[in-house]
Length: 142
Image 1 (cartoon, rainbow, N blue to C red):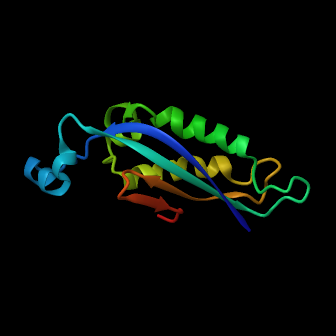
Image 2: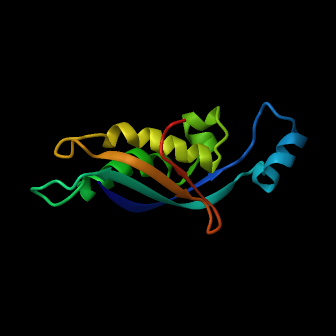
């Protein structure tokens, strides 16, 4: 098994706010991230695909195919957006980086599972860096 990780970047804004909580609870829980005008991040996304090395090509997965899939399914969807306003999923789910990481995984997983020439390849995990100080990883299972 080999692991191929490719890095991507996108920018998006969000407001961490839960409508079922009071203003005081939201402020206590989310602090400055509950700003009514939101705030933005320059996210760094690592997508890791796992699979055996294919004998004929010497590769585990086609980088071009991975790039096209991530561009179409993730970057076009999230880059330069306000997650709360522009994405249907995050109108009812607080757009924390944890939830965004899970959503990216769930979006990519069926698109990268055993496709075409790479039947044994699969999405292993996604890693989403929000700042230089914190990142989140998700490998399925929730």
